[in-house]
Structure formats: C-alpha cells, structure tokens
Length: 401
Ligand code: ATP
Image (cartoon, rainbow, N blue to C red; front, side, top):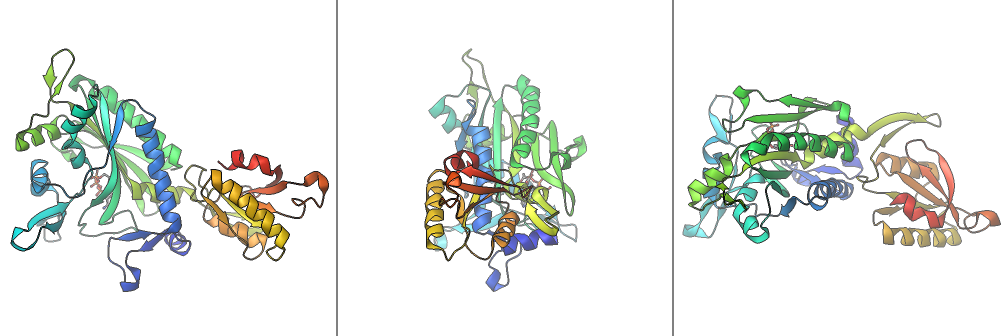
C-alpha cells in the first residue's frame, strides 16, 4: 500500500488534498494522470451502461437537494455511524443555503441515488421509457466519515456511479441476476483482477428492512478484503417514500392500463474504490534486462497515456522534427499521447512503465531513411514484455487507438 500511495503521489495520480496547508483528512486531489485515469473509468462505465444500451438513460442532478428529500429517504433520521461512546452520529455533510435570516440548512448528497428518484417522473414524462429501464448517474457524494482511512478508500468527498433500474415487481430476480453479471463485466473491462473480487450475500439481519436481497462485491485491497461496490434490490421503498412525502404520484402506467409503483435494482459503484482496486491490480514488479522495474499493467482503455513518442536524440534537429510530426499526427487521432525527450531511452521507458503507458515509439535515423528500406518506420516497444518491433508510421494509429 505504501508503494502505491507513493507512486500515485510521485507520478501525479493522487495528492493529499490541500497539501501545502498540511492536508485535510478525508479529501484527496487527483493530479494530471489521476484525472485522466478517473475519466477513463467513468467513460468506460457510461459507455457500457448508458450509451451501448437501449434501456438506460443518464442524468446529472444537483448535489444539493431540497432537504425534505433526505427526510423522506430516511437519511436524516438514519444515515448514521456509532461514535466511540456508542452515540449515533449522522454522517451527512451539512451546508447552509441563502443569506442571513433566509438561510436554510441543507446537505451535500451522501449518495447520488437520491437525485435519480426525485427525477423519476421527469424522465418518464419526457422520454416515456418502457419497463424495465434504468437511470444512471455519475457524480460526487459526501460523507462526514468519522474515521477516513486507507487512502481514497474511505474519503469524505468521493465519486459514485449509480444506477436505479426500474422493473415490474415480478421481474426483479431476472434483473438482479443480469446486473450481478454486469458488475463483473465492468470490473473486468476496467482491469480489476477478477480473482480478487468476491461476492458476499448480505444476511437478512444486516440488510436494510426494505431490501430483499443485497450483494456486496468485495476486493482484496492491500489493507484487507473490503467493499468495492454493491448491488441491492430495494423494492418500491424509495419511490413510495418520495411519493408519500412530496404528495406527487410516482406510479407508472403500463400500456395495459395497469398502474403501480416500479420496484428497483440498484448497482452502486465507487469511482475512487474502482480506481484503487485498479491500481492494486495493475501494480507489478518484475525483472527486465537484468534490472528490477515497477510498472502499471493498465489496459489500453484505461491507461492515462496511450503512447509516448521519443526522438532517439534530442540534440539532432532532424530527428526531433520527424518525431514532432509523428507525435502531432498521432495526437489528432488519440489525444492521450505524451512527448518525452529527457534522458536516455532506457530512462524514458522506465518512466512510461511506471505510469502504465502501453507503447513507446522511438524515431531514429532509420526513420529518416539512413537505411532506405526502413524509411518511415519506427520502433514500437511493448510495456509488459519490453519487446520492440519495427513498424511503419502509417500503422501507428490502429496500433495505439
Ligand atoms: P462502507 O460499508 O465501506 O462504508 P457503504 O456500504 O456505506 O460502504 P454504500 O452506501 O453502499 O457504501 O455506497 C456505495 C458505494 O460508494 C460503495 O460501494 C463504495 O464504492 C462507495 N463509497 C461509499 N462510501 C465511500 C467513502 N467514504 N469513500 C469512498 N467511496 C465510498
């Protein structure tokens, strides 16, 4: 874990929040590579669960909601953890909205799901989706965790990717099973080691009273086996509670004329925990060319940098010019390309290995035509094996993308 935290800091993935002021417990800042990695994870999720499906749509609701919504959902009375003295402490972060006497207390959402339920009717009225269908949302959530710990695993500000999948009551088991598989499919697509993910059935006694079934997906983090994401069947609890408290009818009308409150399956993913599980899965130490090295075995889809382009020597203008040309051409098609001309090639390889770049591309004198048969070819070096190939510049985009 110490190695991961230090690599994340050193190479610009994750910094302690407000570090120059001594940090702020439970808050973390994502650096230049961290933000790319995080965006890639979110994009993969959005693509897989929203864009590639006909039965899903997206939403981006406000973080601050009418506090009545959190009363109805049970968070005001029940979203609490025990303090050392056994007293319960509500972990919703509070804020104040409006000026002076007008000010009202409000909460920073402790989960993104709330914004989905309060927009159920809006989405049904604007898109008229047929059951079963889901609404997905990615966004920040806040919890005043009593003891933030384990790096980004338990933070006070974090990000969630949540889905409320609305079904006819009798369909819940089929949908639950489908989403159970989807959770694994997503983990696999990200590159989270499947052998380290474990399903845990949450026992009746530990489940919320309205939930008929819950599975926790746990991951073998370096600090122990802990929850990565969750999947819950929440019946019609949320929609019914919001309907009752708001006085707005949140039932669904079938083509057959039947009217009822849909039931819901909720897959809930933590972006930061997925990123940490990915870092832990990708972190590799091996020996290459008689030297030990550290590298991140990211797949192409999540790697923050897809390829790095080097001129063999930085003091040869004709090499630099050609390398710049290749770099600019690639960047037009694949934006996440890095330029590096610092130090020798071996050092550049190691630097790219450490941030998980799948390919390094070197422009040398043969590229310029020193050996005529090699003109307009480059060396492409593969991160995991260290193997090098000679390929034509024309083939680079398909290789790297
Ligand atoms: P835990 O038992 O670890 O506190 P939870 O059961 O309270 O988690 P949920 O309320 O189910 O978590 O939230 C859904 C997801 O949001 C979790 O699976 C996790 O990925 C993420 N998450 C929850 N709390 C935090 C946190 N403090 N920091 C980072 N991610 C979190």
